[in-house]
Length: 84
Image 1 (cartoon, rainbow, N blue to C red):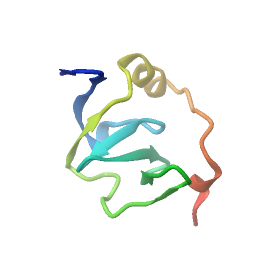
Image 2: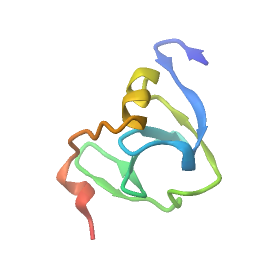
Image 3: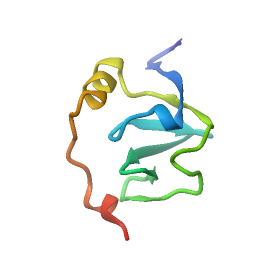
Image 4: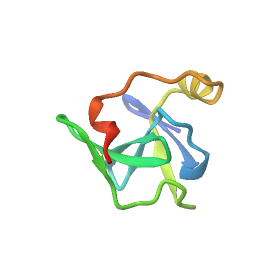
């Protein structure tokens, strides 16, 4: 679907690969190591929605990057993703 200045598509959270950004309720999250991490300018933090939820989300990550992530590419991520 195309929006002025923004291209997104819908996808089930369980199908989104690690390293992709998703948008839930207009809030950006990173999918990383079976976690759904809420994005902010300062860090990632645990969200309330389970990673393997049957819920769908908007995905702004470009199709070419999604293809790379699905085929094994692992991006460097901020140290705040290493929460315990």
